[in-house]
Amino acid sequence: MTDDQYSGPVMDDPDDENHTAAKSRPAPGHGHGHSDHGTGPASPHARRVALAVVIPAAVITVIALVWLWPDAVKGPQRSGVGAQRVNGEVVAVEPAPCPAPPPGSEAPAGSTARVVVCGTAKVRLADGPDAGQEVTTDIPSGPGAPIVRAGDQVVLVYLPDTLGGRPYQIQDHQRGLQLWMLGCAFALAVIAFGRWRGVSALAGLAVTFAVLLLFIVPAILGGKPPLLVAIVGSAAIMLSVLYLTHGFTIPTSVAVVGTLASLTLTGLLSAVSTSAASLTGVASEDDLFLSSAYPGVNMQGLLLAGILIGSLGVLDDVAVTQAVTVTELAQANPAFTPSQLYRAATRVGRAHIASVVNTIILAYAGASLPLLLLISANNQLGSQILTNQLVAQEIVRSIVGTIGLIAAVPITTALAALTAHRISEHPKAPTGRRAGSRRDQRRRPTAVDWHDDDGLDWSPERG
Image (cartoon, rainbow, N blue to C red; front, side):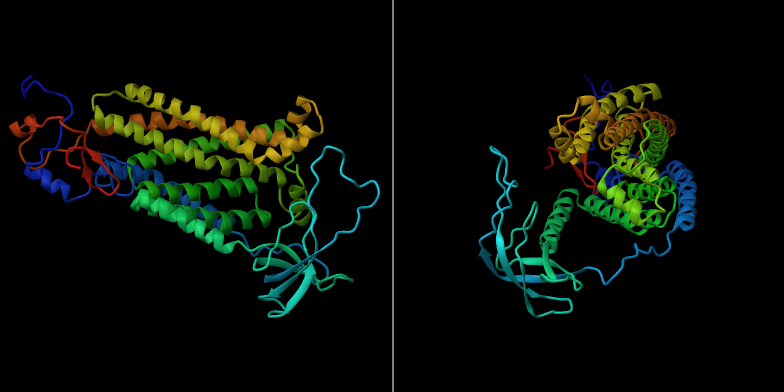
């Protein structure tokens, strides 16, 4: 086959003067976003498309944030001084024989006996009204009680109004240091693998926590409509995190539109489903306590808000994957029509959905495993277990979230296929030497170019 007959993919010629220049600058679309190969931020068309999406959405989101921003939330009124949490270190543990259980309270034959430890523990207080002093308290007992040893850092509850007994009770272990170490290991792993993309992902995670803790939670506690708060908060998270993590590119803008459309569908389906299933949002002791302590919270709306927020993370994952898949396919074969791009990328989406659906169901099942064990232990019928409000609530979450996830694939893929086709109709003019020169025609597919997210080219031959 001669040089002029070859029409397959081409390689950069290492001896070419433009190859050296290209190596000194980041590849288009390989800043902090997915690769966009010539349709990155430098493209005027890319800027118009991205700005047409992000500006109206951002303006509406900011206005809604200002309108719904919560005032200072007051906690529930309590009588008396109340409990105070203090920190301390266990100095010594003095076990003692436990009193005999009352008649009739023995464990049934064949059951596993729970180990009960009795005695006292001396704790040196690190803060609180008696900081620096050593106090004596009972060794914790009962289901889930912490096991304490000398040298353990513990959290105590101080009850000054206790009549008799001891005012200090050990409640839990301190685990702040361990969590900080685990968080640092997580951040190092993300940065080591993702490099600058990992740094931007961690910044996006910080934005997500800020929106959740500073806006969504206080606004719902303050009596704002939970569903509306969740929609606005999800939009703020999505707009900031997607562009921060994946870059200001056309695939990101397409993913934003696809996620918004899928999130809207998920909200509508969740509202219809919870109403049809007569779910009140008060299905557990925590729900009951919250509704009693904060009567202004709409518990059914809170259920809808939880479904939306829980679906957002998986929706933007699928949307970004589909948008980037279409972009890569269009770059690999510019002759693809929108329908061909759609069909090819949809096959990728089906494979992705097949695994993600199982992930969602298993995630909800894992979170509800103690509940399933408790209900099953009561020897209830299968129909009674499934229609129990606690279980039905999780079933609605799983099904509605999965339907929204499935909808994100065709919506995002169709938008990305149309956008990629329009861009391919207006290719960038070649720069440097004359287009179609003999050196262009000599370029051979001797290796595959791999582009990492730092804009550096790598190929198996070059190492």
